[in-house]
Length: 345
Image 1 (spheres, rainbow, N blue to C red):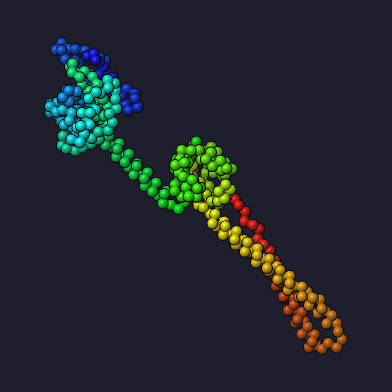
Image 2 (cartoon, rainbow, N blue to C red):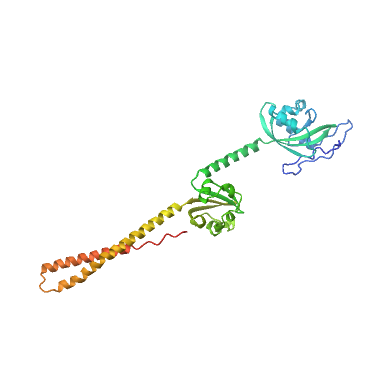
């Protein structure tokens, strides 16, 4: 490698965009290479160590503050002394043949002068420093990032535990109708495995569902979607479900309960009502026939001569009772009319 290498040009943001760049440093009158202020004043912790003995050769102020050393004391150390012993062998393997280009070495555990350990994201670039093979390192403290990620993961796990414990089936789809979550109860109700449906287009996985209200709501522009609750029958699985849909920023969240058992129970009740209705109608007609005959004969009895006043009174009471019984039978027939079958939404 030529000694005029641009030894800071490797430093990039994790997105790959350069954040600092130095022109090739030139030998000074004393034979030492000049340093760019970008190295010394960079807010990113930077240091250089030799590949042969891992001795630190240079360090910037941000790194001194991160590790808690003065410049003089830091340059007395080697790269093994700012990390726990468990990381030393990993370090030696990493620097045996480092690439000559910018390289992401991943996450490491480093140690402050006072003993506190913290995680860093390490980026490195092989270079020359005073004609020595060396590596220039940027070591960003990522403890806050990891804490945020751990908190997010904890909340995600907590939410997943809730979604897995509820008695509702639940799934979520994004703007492309791809399934992003599918809980255990959804597996049971829809008789499929979550690993088969996750990442798939919901309406392609369940093609008959394109006639459902879920699909109709999904096809609306995002700003027109509203929460909705309804009953729905899915013929391919012969199931009835009670559905609650909630629009979200990037799709829909759908909760649903299997109401097939309730539907079947209502059907049994309807059948029983029909049977009772048939029995009531049959017996009512059986009773009403003779009763109609009695009501027809009563006027003839009243016309006979010689009927005593007492007999006429008795006949009037019989006639009144027969009419009341006729009204009761009419009510039974009316109430025995069968209910219409339960519709399937």
